Length: 620
Ligand code: N01
Image 1 (cartoon, protein in one colour):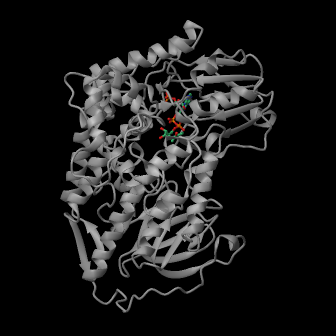
Image 2 (cartoon, rainbow, N blue to C red; image 1 turned 45 degrees about the vertical axis):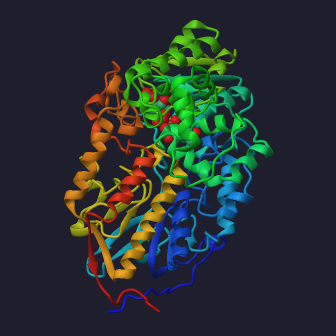
Image 3 (cartoon, protein in one colour; image 1 turned 180 degrees about the vertical axis):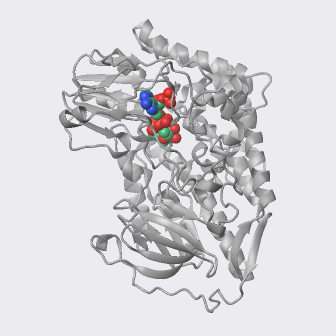
């Protein structure tokens, strides 16, 4: 049987999706999700001659995370010139970022610009949710079905539907009386139709989203009640407009600027540091890219290790670099690579950082009791570090009131607002609006099938069943018994602990290389040898073991280990003990982006099992 790809129905474009007739077709590749990863894979596939693609996107347009999250204050906290695609030099040169950190509207504009420039929308069915993806062992194809009645058969299936795209309101019951008299919504689906001016607003959640939204809400609310279960560690942001000179300095040697991020800092969180800004601000000439020698960035890290002035400068530069420059000055810590990991595995360094950040809280927040309530008691970076200058000063405003829940959850919202476990009101005035900034069912996308329906591989096994007791993946990209199923920025990959755009791009290149390898060798399908996914899972656990995510320094509850959706009982006792879930249960690869990139190249394609079928590829 020839498996030449045939488009049975012409591809509709984004503008022709409503009330369309269901599509039945056979294509080479299906892509679920058209955020930054979906766009990266589409670009790379086409560049390498894979043109038979069908993509599905729940939203009306591209952008993924940046399409959905439109809450006030929504912005990136990685330098904008780093948080962008590197695949086109032309794109790099012609796009101008207005600020150090892109705000959501600008990032979405960028996504649209890229989609227009490279025609990335034309294969996509927008406003279409995938209901199921079933592997047919006879035809060796994935059958993808959608809520619009489409049925697409494809050889390869990419899950690019995002790590944080399924909003969660864990355990919060909102009464009908409240629903009738007030408004409520999740930050992921922020309701901009409601005029918030002079309203009594409550917001549950003080993670990355909450800390960004709270200052903006405080500017318009009559009263803002902030419900804090656990305080967040925050580092200074130091956002600013980009000058033409800074832009030109980066664009002069963009590749080196990007390399610096990975080289100076293991490409982990510190990779998005202000160190590159320090170089720029110091007016240093950046040496050209691809040099084998360590280069200016490493020299800088070494300088930070030995020179308190340089260290201070790095700490003041803002962003993740603030936190990670603390490692560099420790006498036991080697410069450069260790500098990035210092606070993550060295509690002496972490403690120093905690003291530095706590002092900032006390300096900024006038009321010492509120300052104390806002000060976390767990290691920095155990939860996602927030990057903000506006959050703490917000608590000096007379219209803002902090409800310190001291570890307890809000479980009940009565007629007028949230109540404690004894039914006592947690408000002075009835709320007009309740906003939940309570995070996400992280990485369920494909992991348990809840967001994109069931994903069923060989022998009827679903991803949900496979990952029931923990993740088992090959490099965070494939998993045994799910042939030709490719995970983008999924569990056990560098993903959210890296720069999501560059992490997705790196994986896109790797996957397309794999597909080219298969095409050249006449391989029809690829699966994983069990031993190797065990090896990868063990490596992930090993990387995590001695870090704050693995419980060093006491651990914390976080979505990194799925402890955000677990409940506490009435006395605040955890129903899941986070410390008992460290190691392999951490969702993300914790070794950092640089090491991850090295590993995926080193492993290429060790531990993969290919099946031959010479006639399937169109060799014309
Ligand atoms: O979600 P979160 P998020 N009662 O899970 C609290 C990325 N991101 O949307 O800390 C009371 O971090 C919960 O309390 P606790 C980034 O990767 C990036 O803020 O679990 N409170 C916590 O305070 C980030 O990590 C940017 O005790 C309840 C909050 O809700 C990820 O998205 C910007 C509760 C949830 O915090 C998720 O961040 C924004 C309850 N029942 C987001 N349930 C960038 O800048 C939950 N909470 C790039």
